[in-house]
Amino acid sequence: MAKPVVTRFAPSPTGFLHIGGARTALFNWLYARSTGGKMLLRIEDTDRERSTDAAVTAILDGLTWLGLDWEGDAISQFARADRHREIAERLLAEGKAYRCYATPAELEEMRATAMAEGRPPRYDGRWRDRDAAEAPAGIAPAIRFRTPAEGETVVDDAVQGRVVIPNKDLDDLIILRSDGTPTYNLSVVVDDHDMGVTHIVRGVDHLTNAARQTNLYDALGWDVPVMAHIPLIHGPDGAKLSKRHGTLGVEAYRAMGYLPAAMRNYLARLGWSHGDDEIFSTDEMIEWFTLEGIGKSAARFDFAKLENLNGHYMRATDDATLMAAFLATLPHLEGGPALAERLDDAGRGRIEALLPGLKERAKTLLDLLDGVQFLVASRPLAFDEKAAKILADGGAEVLKALLPHLEKVAEWTVEATDEAVRTFAEAEGLKLGKVAQPLRAALTGRSTSPGIFEVLAVLGKDESLGRIRDSAAA
Image 1 (cartoon, rainbow, N blue to C red):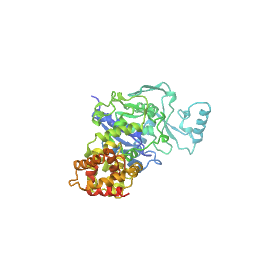
Image 2: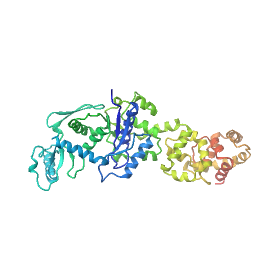
Image 3: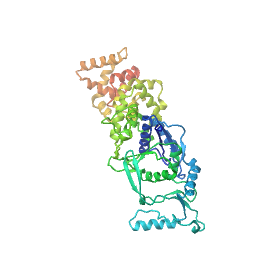
Image 4: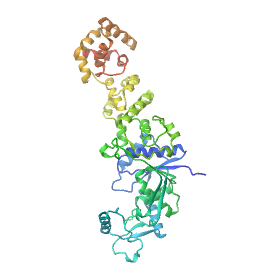
């Protein structure tokens, strides 16, 4: 009987949760969900100088915002250092590792010689078979793993296929530094084994580490987990995604007003596919996800595609859910806290009433924030350039003539205001747009908005007439 699938996401807390890490977490989460397994979270915080509590918090918050949960508590790799040292000492006792007394100066000399001869810089194995009695005084040794010198290491990768690496290209890696601290490759192997990880899904840049780790698994007599090395994410220009492309943390995408469901959909399509499907629910992703569906080629991050996809999700999300997401995200949006401070029940009611029209014009929650400003604005309104031009080019005179007709409307509804404006336009020999455009400018300060009669109804008679009077008198 096959073991239940256990995946893990293992970020280093040296910065924010970047988009590549978010996709790796998503793929691990999807595979665990699709197989009825579980995903664990391990914080690889062994780099004490660069690891920060703020980065850990950012990673946890980013995963939570994306809707990716994990089994149990997040595990600190640093807290398991004693266990890693125990395994290093076991390998040493079994003759599968050895003490290396090479000094920093000697290691630098090896590097310089290799570079000068056009070889990759590698440790030359000088302490591999030497007697410890030859150890120089005052030098604290590192412990190196005795990598097989002959043959090759094979990684049967679920994405990349059969990867063969000659053992001569793998030097004797340090597993315990001279100060007693474990190194990455040893810590990862021990943790994955102890945590019962069955499938390692991570970036293809770890493929060489996969060979080193496979040798460690074999030396320890442990089963090697299934490995799946996923392609990198490139920028629009085809180069590896980097700071030059404005690489951002997940929290930045929240601040730009993207919806978590849209981000999950977009990230899933970066390297994984299901036929020609572009838009799918999270449940569909879980149902369809397989490691075989992951391609080998690098994916290109495209903001325009993300924005268009997010626009689809904005329109497809029911109004109550979208309103809740908008209010929850306000503290993270530029200008959001200011709106939240002055948003009372009446303001929320106006936004909810016009949300069907507002979301049609918004691709992000940031667009929605911009679109609702007129609903909570104080008089007199500020006008954008197009609205000001409409009013200056005869619009104010039209409003001045329209005002008495609207003042006479008894029941302030969409239907009643619609009839009053159309009747006025016909009597004046004007096309409806010649009246609606200045009316929209006066009510919203913009040249675009949801349906103008819906706007009139939501603002109410007093506020609507006040704004029209302000513009007519301008």
